Image 1 (spheres, rainbow, N blue to C red):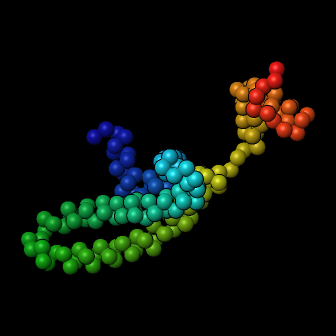
Image 2: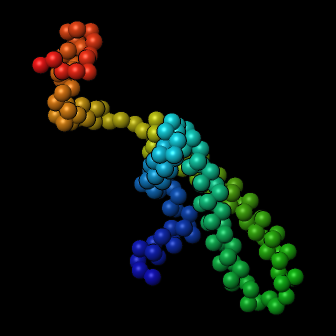
Image 3: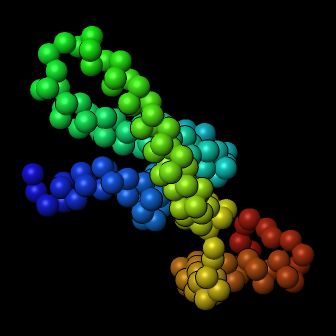
Length: 165
């Protein structure tokens, strides 16, 4: 297991990976791109909802599953009868899940994940003031006919699709 895989494993156990800004932005972009290809008018709000569902049903449940599995692997050698172990595992797991939800998953969702999701993708993505001018300059250089059509529109009040030059 190389160093990168060990970091991912530690990040998954400590529940840090779903809260990284780069991870949220990358997941949002991938999810939106995938859905936008399938449905051309896919809104950003729908991707936001899918990301929230992914947080709860994929990230939270897999994190809790890892914690529960590690706990089971530690306690199984001490018990010989499964009928004895299952009720205690179920009750302990339920209590642990409620505690983790109240003290880790919910606060992280509302105070960390959702604000980062709102600012990292879609309509909530803030635009830096200098970036707008740079984008227009780049487009103007890469599309020289834009000036021609824009000036024709200003003079005539309309734009024709055929060139009369």
